[in-house]
Image 1: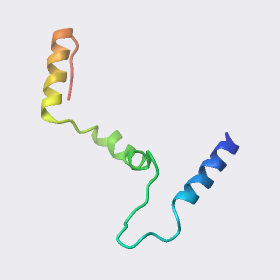
Image 2: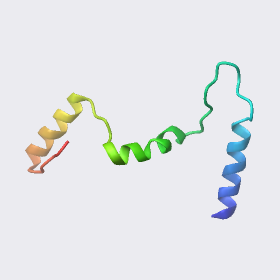
Image 3: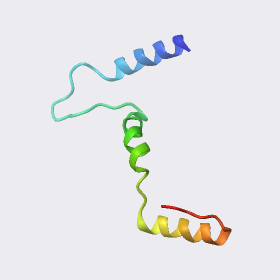
Amino acid sequence: MTAFKARMEAYVDEIKPPKKARGTEVICVTGEPEHQRVPERMETGIPLQAKVAEKLRALGKDMGVPIIL
């Protein structure tokens, strides 16, 4: 696992140059924004659109499974 981690860190270092292009705030690799949001999502949950939440509640009711959103 150590060799894999070292290769990934080298890969990320290659993708994320020390200087960003003008007008660029952040350079992210795949999955990085999601990984950065993990603590927030663990605390507050994953936001759902109202229609999705309604459908999940209805599905839970039909299946006899309580859905708490």
